[in-house]
Every structure is written in C-alpha cells, then in structure tokens.
Length: 309
Image (tube, rainbow, N blue to C red; front, side, top):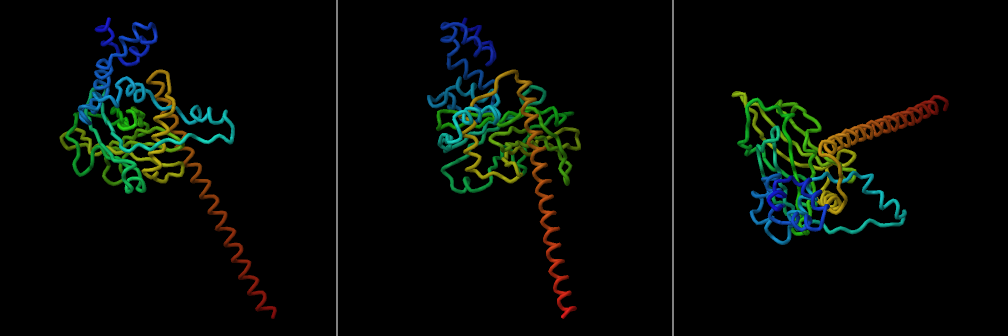
C-alpha cells in the first residue's frame, strides 16, 4: 500500500489520507512528501539540500501551503468583518529570512530552476527599499534556451518560504501568464505572472530574447510588488503581506480554475488601478480649472479697480 501511495500526486495523496486512519498514517510519510515536493519544485534541492530534511520544515506542510493559491481578499476578510468593526487584525511576526524557489516550465517540462535566499527583517536596507527579488539578472542571463519556444507557453512557479517561521510558504505566481508584452526599446518579450494579495499585486516578470539562431533565451526573472496606485511597496510592507498570506487560508478547486481566477483578479486589479488614475487625473484637471478661474477673476478685478479709479 505504501508503494502505491508513493505513485500518487499531491492532491490525490492528500485526498487518500482523509479516507481512513490507516491511510492517514501511511500518507504522512515524510519521504513521500519530500519526493513530491522535489518533483514539483526542483529548485528546492538547489536552495538548501537539507531544507526539507530539517525538522523546521515539514514537506507535507510545505506542499499544503505552496501548491494551492492563497485565498482572495474577500474570503480572507470575511472572518474579520463578522467579528465586528472594533476587531483588530492579529499581529504577525515578520519573516527574518526568505527563500525563493523559482521554477520555469515549457509545456510542462522543467526548463530552469533557481533558488534565492534573501535576508528580510534583519536588514534595515531591505525593509526601507522597494521590494524586489531577482532570480536571474540581466547582467548574467540564464543559459536556459529552447528552439521555437513561444513566451506564452512558459509556466512559472515562484514560492516563498520562511525557513525560520516553521517552514510556512506561499505561492506568489499565477503559473500561467496573465499578460505578454514587448519591451518598448529592446523588443524583448515580457511574460508577466501575478497574484493579488491584500490589495497589492505580486508580479513576476520573465524577460525573453529571441536570438539570431532562432532560439529563445531567458535573460531575466524578477519579482516586485505594487499597491493599488501603482507605487512600489517597500520590503517591510511586502513582508507583512507575505506573513498574512502564509497564515491565511488557501483556495480549493481545480488547478486550472485557480489559475483562471488568478488571471481574473489580476485583470480586475489593472482595471481598478486604471480607474483610480483616471479619477485622479480628472480631479487634477478640475483643480487646475478652478485655480485658473480664480486667477482670472483676480486679474479682472485688479484691472477693473485700476480702470474705475
């Protein structure tokens, strides 16, 4: 039975563990979940070979946190709204360190794996600067490339782990692209993946360039956070969002439906940001008109006073 359970994927194994107490005991085998995590996210092995072997990070807990998408704001805020207006949100400790496990797939096949360790709350520079994590930098692009690779066919998994906070993790990528653009100057393809957490957008961008040989090369992979007005969120603000997402609920349902829902929330965020910018522009135009009218009245009053004197 144990050999049969090891052939299941994570969702099927979790469902089997709910059947009987015996299956639950067999499905709780750490080696089985460790193998599932490494098969799903090969970058975990590159991050720290002992990350899933330590007692601080449970492979089963990691899979349960990182595989599903984090819950949207409405369902996460429902318990607080039911508690009353005077209820205060719980104080969450900020992660002292972040481990980003980044995996790129092309039509389901692993193409690139990177792991980035970021000192978080222990660095004052990180807390005050705009949040940004670079998995692949443009100065040293990745050697990963493929012939006839369409950027829209790329899938991205970006999970962030708090190794000192009980191994809690959260997925901050929509896995499927939410938008594919072109750089205005270089013409490189910008493949965007995003999730909306706490009213802010976590956006991972994969920059691809088409070589003369006909291959497509990944030149840059980065993650940044923007608020509803399009301003960059600081490291401290991003840590608070991540801590809340790690402690919050997860979305259920099919993986395809969850990816479609993530894209839909991204599009709603973009429309909302565009609407806020247009509303702000209209207010500024109205203020300019009022100021111009007051100035014109003042000038005309001065001229009339001089003429009638």
